Image (cartoon, rainbow, N blue to C red; front, top):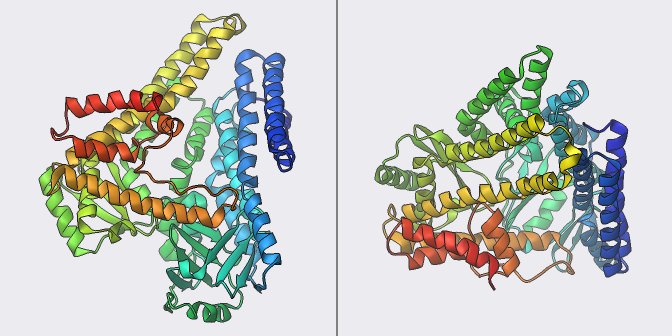
Length: 568
């Protein structure tokens, strides 16, 4: 039974109260803050199971936990904000005035409502007994948190410049940055805000941070691992500051078409469709709502949703291409390399694309060999050619083995098992309360086992791709290991630098390296829950394995998946 609106609001407020209580007390007494959260959390869980039927209790627990963790995302930037305010008060800084236009934030809100329109409609008009309503409520927590953070940032963000240390401060209670202009590798001016690449629901593979407060000219600052967008009022004056930095060059203004321009209609439509089908359940909610009002039988509903899912899988390469703003690669050297690698792999009709992003990554999409694309980020394409060759070989194996399609099939298998379990319970268990304890453990087992199950088949595909890819590159395992090693080093550099811009001094830790064997707990998480095995293991397995892909490396991975997860 889906809770009433009043119950939903009450449990959201309780979850927020638990987080705020711990945060406020922890600000002065850290251990007491943790103890307070534990006490309130355990008390809330106990009350839920006492006051509600057993299965319904999980719905209320989900509301509590979702609101709790959502509020954490809203308050996580507070320490950095307070640290920067103290620093600014002790320095001679100049405030850089921002241009503000209310239409800018209204546009973001409107796009969010468009993306989740059918989900909200289903929430209002759909049948009360539908479990989809529960998933919509949970998914909307993230949406609302993202929008609340964006709205508050729009109204609060301020920018300061400190000349002596050539430092820029971007200050907001919810999202702050501090960096020197020496870190800025590129400064560009765009003619208008490109909301289609800045809105968080319309993008993929992006490292953009949107501080824009106007629809007019935008200053784009490129940093290691991050791209920051600002609406500076006196742009020419700030450009003079940038010119003083020898690492910055003046570039011509980049012309950006408004999102409503006729040349952007296809791009806008594709991104909205991507957001409604991939980043949310809005499109599926709309299909189900229509079927409910047509009074379609349950089996027909399942069949239609399944067919719609298969359609989305079939067109996934086109949808993701639009979402990433990917363009066909025009680097002839890499295109020639790709053609050579495709011939070696026995794969045809694979298109190579480039997506502007500071991430170091590659992505294979498309459900079959005849319709597939491999997308590299612009940062990845700056790596040495032999490294790109290794990454390309890895992605080609994903295409050849149809890993995108099989990944979806294995997920569907698990969901089918869940459906069978639920239907079996409904058919054979007349009184749920008589089986509280076994059902409690069964439900929690299914919740915990799903990410482990998913991690297992995804990691198997990744290990296979690494070792089969080594047969495609010129220098075998050694080259593949070197490709992954250099890729990992560059990923770590960009990530550590971008984190340093937004974490407070108290929160900053030793720079992480993916090539080092980490603590037991982190290895357990990586091996059991992540899509990729730890990078240190992937590199070492390539160096030590001289027999190629087969039972030996598969056995080693399966063994180390357990051994590395439970030993020091």
